[in-house]
Length: 356
Image (tube, rainbow, N blue to C red; front, side):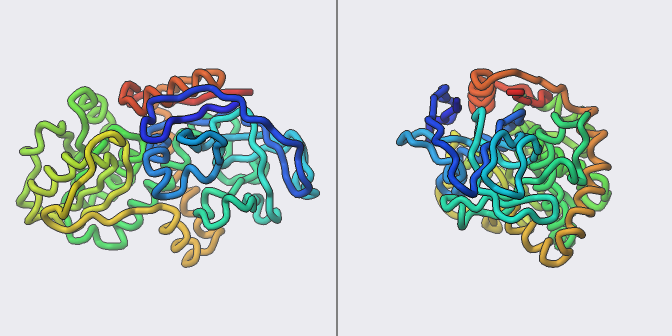
């Protein structure tokens, strides 16, 4: 069984039966155990055509897609000598009860899916890590790993890029969709440096939660942007992708804005910018490209060590600020995805779907 998402109308989901063919030589079937759903998954759907996210798990139905998520799965059947039934992995999964992969060689405790339809896509999404040797894996924190691990990697890289660039000469970093987990994970990293002020922008309904996180120096609602200090050099990190908000922030900070970074599309149904904005034009932040650069510079082991150390420091904060909301079954997954796409989900909740 699978959850299908209507392209261009992401709040519409439905349960579908996609026939599973017998395995071919070189394939492995995995039983999906649990996965998380956050605003990040909505971004995958919103950028599905632009960045290829719909291609990871093709749908047989025109106009409907299989939105990817992150979680854990167990090998149930394998025609790959190096992959054994019963082994467990962490990686990119569909909202489905099972998935067929084409594992490549087993290296460094992981393998990459070599299926033809996934060639040319970002390698970081094709990698599956065996839990038996995973530096970040701990059985008692699986839910938090599924929730924050992919988001935290993006946040870690945002912080890294900003620090390497000397924050582009800014004294303040302004973040939209500040109540989203990727944004406040990045804010947690940035605020720990004490080098710049971190300002969060969010909806009026989420200002109390966002302020209570303790990682923003101040939090403003979208209808209070006059509170932004236009006299201080600034960087804008846009997780919302809302054209009206982006235009308003650029207009307010025009002379002070040193750099504008587009990360997410949590406001997937909001208007997009229609033309050039005041100040520097937004540059797309694509985490897989930044990760590939850092792995080339630090080596795979060095990258794993640095992200692992940062993750260890972040995990207590994640546990303290997140109310785990575990649901069971694919029907529940469809409802949660719809709530996230419609903006009905509470930011404090960490949604995990268990199928095991």
